[in-house]
Length: 152
Image (cartoon, rainbow, N blue to C red; front, side, top):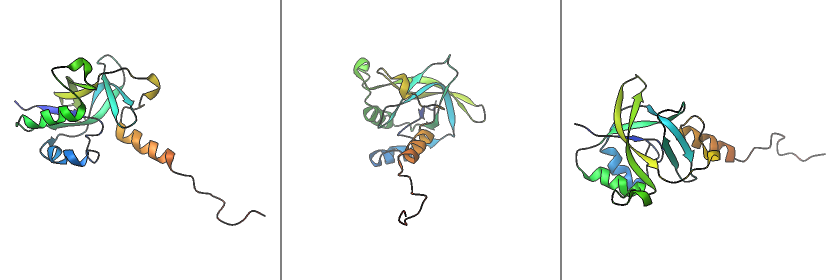
């Protein structure tokens, strides 16, 4: 039976670090999806907190994992997950139910943030790609709409 991984942050298409590109190419993209929970901006990456009873969603993409045993282990290392010591892991790998845009539902692995989060870091809308795009637009220096002429 195939295994799936739901990605919502730095493993999403176009965001994965170069050192993981070979792993991401081995996985089969399944489409856009969501799962109940909250997503937080932790500066360099997001952190997901699952909550099947909340009315907010984490948006991302599920991928079918290759049946090689290596890919998931390498991703565990990248995410700071150690199955022998989950309490001290930055993220823990859990199962979650995701829903594709066409309403297809299936179970995936997801990396859930394992430490405390600040409510102020909540990503409204649950989409890290959109949040990151908005954040970069806010950082852009504003152009002077008056032009480059001198003030008289």
